Length: 385
Ligand code: KG4
Ligand code: ZN
Image (cartoon, rainbow, N blue to C red; front, side, top):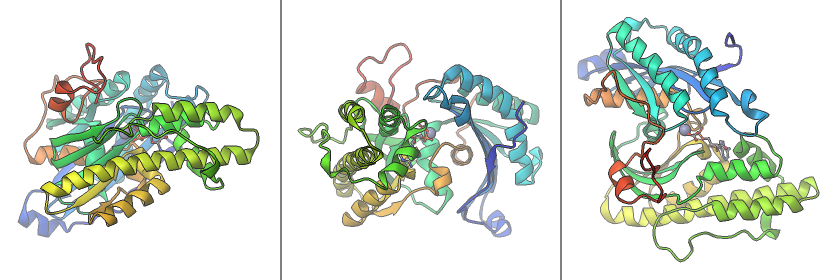
């Protein structure tokens, strides 16, 4: 069994509340969060008080090396690895936080959406801790974790306009509070991160593709490549990346030199940034008609991309929105965001039954997703996004 030499741990950007003052003002909630929905086994302890969120520990074991040879995440390997790692990762998060289980107010675990074999591992572990320590269990939607992740670095007032861009999702949402979000737009095919990963794979860049493609793009000039622009005739806030993916993957076959590849990487990154920016601009205009306070947040793994961050920051400034993105370590999957979402739910009394089930699909705005499924074939598992 892996003893943890390849863990990453540490905290960043947390606002440090003064506990004495907070205890006088209101409740201080300390929550253990667990995340196992994809290829990271993660655990974190977060303390939420009137003055903000403090990350006491954040431990992440990445499985990247185990999946790299296959060019993507293999669900069976992921689930087995989570089983091996979860206990060590959770214990380490508790010891780095320097607290005993008696100091916890609740246990939060990702209950979906994601690879269900992995989700079940973290959720079952969370249930075991909740039962053994007589603590409330909070089943957290992984996307809700991303939605609150910017609050790990700075105070962020609700409501805000959110662009959630990860490997599996690409959505614009109005976030009014925990468990209270409306979808303004979503991808009708691939997610932005998926496009980065698949194009990078076609270019032979390895997995995960997003960071590799970003590094390569730094030395490229994409102006010689013409890439398709999706859904140009539509006035809504939906996204589509499959045409770009197909066109870029074909162009990848024609690249002969390293410079060709770098140029294509730059063109792809700019095309993805442009589409994200165009749809977000539409959403900002609509949002500004209905809100006085204009706050924009970008979250999810793709928010780690510096070109995309910069493009969106400029856009926010142009439309009078404040701009916020999570600290880099909380853009990609982590458990601090799950612990924080859990603490915010606990504060509202939104706890879960011990028999809550893991869900491979779990849209944030479930009513909208069921009424207007962008993926027409929802199947037995329900709407995807
Ligand atoms: O949020 P995340 O860790 O997992 C999901 O919930 O999907 O996002 C992972 C995705 C991957 O597709 C990865 O390629 C992408 O985020 N990503 C990036 C960058 N870092 C991660 N994409 C572009 N540029 C990056 N620097
Ligand atoms: Zn994620």
